[in-house]
Image 1 (cartoon, rainbow, N blue to C red):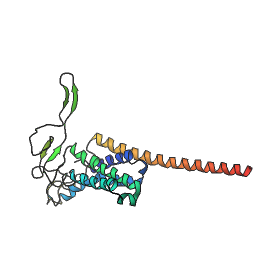
Image 2 (image 1 turned 180 degrees about the vertical axis):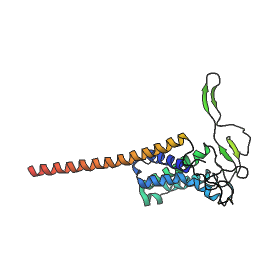
Image 3 (image 1 turned 90 degrees about the vertical axis):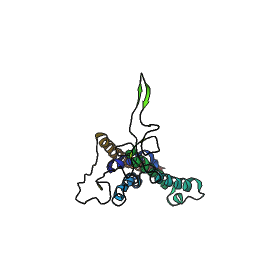
Image 4 (image 1 turned 90 degrees about the horizontal axis):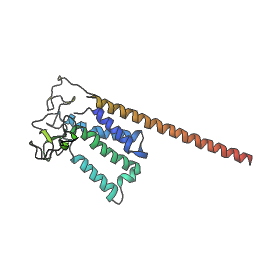
Length: 239
């Protein structure tokens, strides 16, 4: 399972890239929170067998939320979200949904643990692992999608098992099953590899640059406005 810090870093990168004029501390916090929400199913695994990477890592949750958002902001005559929070709220809501999927679910699907994408309608974890290359002898070769792959899954992706046969250990629940002993060893990974450390560092640097840049830009605009006012006053005094 990808460390929650890495999910948060991906969310921060999406916030900086997609929020546009809605970028501020509050909106970034909301987007980063959305990116880490799927990891809460690890807590649920203490009571529900197989909940990790299934309960909140499926496609039904974002599809349902996306349908409601689209109906409210596009189809509905009077958008409740827009009426209450304006364009700002609409932008933050859509970016948060993107962070939930791209930063919260995708790192598991394309990582080491996998995600139960169709749970609970169909119980099977999926894992996207492979390569894409061009060979001078074989042409384009990809091993991500395997049509007719064996396993419990109905999608043409590798499936390591179901909630009954496959367990995703976490620091919250090392055994991945209800009834984990409180004395069990727990390891909280902040990053698991070098590329994850790069993502976290890049997100921290980008947020710092954005926030400092906005502050400096605001100061510059204020100085220019003050200077213009002073010059106008001086000209008025001469006249």
